Length: 464
Image (cartoon, rainbow, N blue to C red; front, side):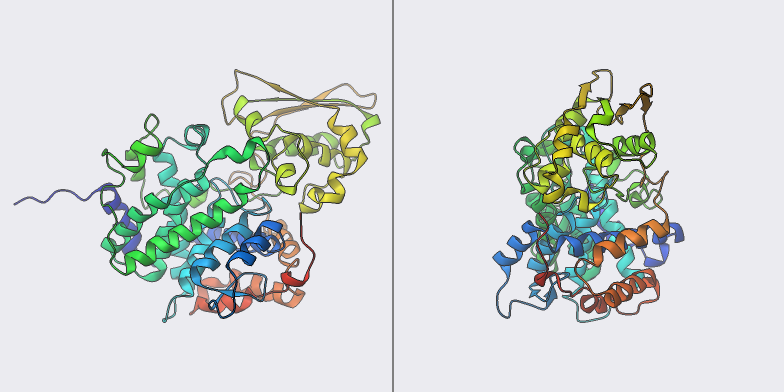
């Protein structure tokens, strides 16, 4: 009697459950450590964001759990911690990109929340493998849904729609689920998937919540599976109610779920963000910083800034609404104006006082965006600066800083981490957390990270 081959979900689940931690190549482990450090920094600073504080106010209560809300003195249930820490990690647009898309803000909060449920130690090597698997599964689902351009272009926000699978995979691995239970978790995750780009039209803050919901959903999916609550086995199949038939009926390529599995680790394609803006604005910011050579300008010194860009990038970040931090960080024109006026592209350049600077309004009037219909959706913009008496100069950065082919240096990454983590932790605590992350492969019990992530954001001013 022949058996039916395992479903796509079953094959992915077996890979998640059965791949030994020792199979992780050294270069993949090294890159993962960089992303863990980066995500912790983004989340600790994000603990001071308005959306995070609101999330914390909603879920926090006396005796509500033992999992830390990172950067604060609050403890929460594992489910609520995954949600709040996911919101925090994505709240300032400083988390990584290129995975599900924002994989770190989804996977790490879920994995750490799962860790806090464990009654046995989980080694650093095992935690790294869980995180890598989360990145891998979330990205593979996105690629099988047609890729970033097709899936997001259809109106879905891939961070929650695909990221929930990554969070489920990472949580399942931390919890030690077997292949069948992990398949159940992926099945549950498919029904927890959701998230739309509707926020882009009025600069609403819903986007900030998406990573938290995906982390929470993935953790819940794994915990229900741990209790042997069944999830659909054929969730990736060509069936009514299948994920791809529902979310990507025209663009789907389900075979990509398994393409290069165990060889092509998807975290290796992910980027670390040097600028506090939407990743689609980064290449233009890099171009502007090259054109200015470190000099700052008043509007009177700038004749014009001309940006040639795709219609997709223009729809995503072509707006000029500066009313909120969330809006400004999705604005390519503001990113360029801040680079010109302040020479600063970090989070400080986006806070309320800087956004209200009269020099910014004057500089924005000099910036023109022109959609080139010949450009593909994800082609990087071209920037032309006409300043002073010099002839116009043009730059187009094809591989923005922070990409795998153009990475930020270890020193720059540590500086970013220390700056951001210092918004919630004391200086000694920042150093202790950095040391622990960098030496995570030698850690016998990563549950110790809970104590290292408690901080003082509660008593510090909001970032908005």
